[in-house]
Length: 143
Image (cartoon, rainbow, N blue to C red; front, side, top):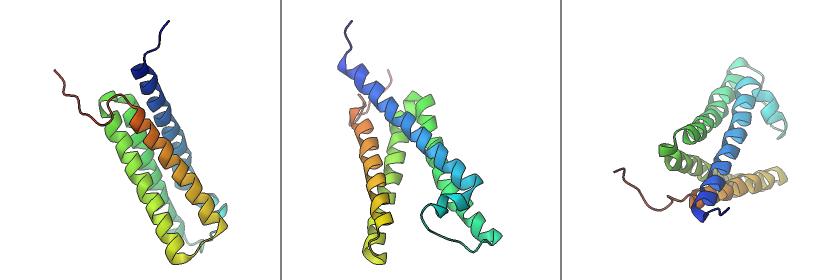
């Protein structure tokens, strides 16, 4: 039984997207339903006022929910796979860029470096899925 390279690359790209779905589903549910637990692990505190907790729900919860939906849509709609993965990569690149900006402006901490490592590795992982997809770098037109 022979496995062609295109099929293998497609399955790798799908595994990358499944990983994105799982990661963003976890983060979206964490920040949407228990935002204080999400920031407690980073040593960040908020006033506990309803508006500050809702701010976390609607900012981080919405961002991760959007990334979850983008990656999930890419899995169920193969025609939109590359577009959705590009959206995920664009957001992750923005997150990494803003993390680097924060390091330059706010200072370097162990937590910031640890998060930069995690975010950077996931960005590279998602890019590897994009590059491995058989359609990456070229558009196909339906006949």
